[in-house]
Length: 443
Ligand code: URA
Image (cartoon, rainbow, N blue to C red; front, side, top):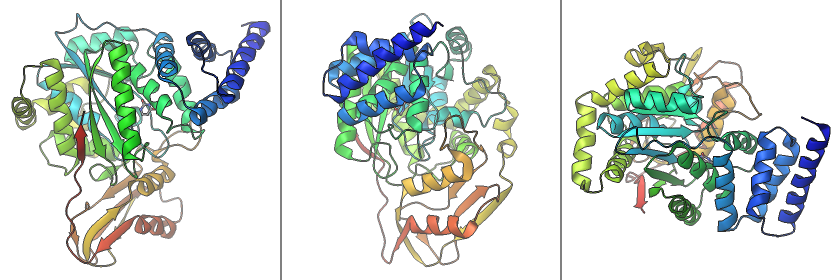
């Protein structure tokens, strides 16, 4: 790369930062150039971080958001999966604590005869990411080339990859920067990031799981709905059929928070264990994906197929086959005890009797992150075994001394401080509390 080209690229990005800062609408060409120059390594991280921060502060028009989505898609290969099956579907979550839905939904849908092709991401801030969770499985390849994704999909009916050199590298590069520069919760940046992955993979239909509440990347319900509508519009602009579920993230999804712990919980759900909140949401998203593939299918018939895929063992067998197809150790699916295990497990017990009234997902996500389940720094390695496992959900009755939260960690740190942070996230009520619904609306 010549020094002149680098200087010219940096000058173009500086002009784009200045224009955005001053409230101008950026042209498609400018947005495309910013992304392309960054992916080509001609723009330093600090400049791209400034551009992302300016966008996060100033927002983007619909046209700019579509242009950013297109720039991410065009940074890599756009697959056409129409020859892989009559319908290929996908799902994507906007991020929350304990969100392992993909690991349940993808095999359930694939076992029901509809192919699932998915490009996904790593953790963002306090919210975990599917790629990090999948790396808990030894050997599992999470950066597939376009050809590998297509071949795994054709072989086992399901393929999941992180962004790679070929698949939305523009999103991969900016995603990692956003994670450490407080630019995660910008509506246009999320919309473009999510939709570029969906468009690049070339599925026919996508279910968007748009989360709101304490433990979501987007806290406010109204903003989450705006995000959902914006993503549906972007999908339509690229010919992609979308449905969106607005789901509540005021408490963690299921009991497990942390990479290997969540893989284990997803395998339990695939084996037929009902995990309150998690299984309900997973079943609904899976049914919507089946309906996207076959618009004639009624909601009841779709639910029946989901039930059958789990109770027959087909969904678990599908997950196992897929793990093997992507090079992972299927022995860890057969025996979840072989997944990474923390050096220490400490159990925090309930210090009073009563009903669980509040379990602050974000606070617990941050505790899990500080135990090593997430990152504070660019490219920071994770401890896949680290995390928390709750022993109850909102509405459950606890008696003093009952196990409340398991802390899975390496033991290097101050347990009293961890315990205090966990206790401050949990509130009891003297009287019964109804369970909190997970599904708020389907758009
Ligand atoms: N998921 C993504 O892929 N990108 C975001 O920005 C947030 C959630």
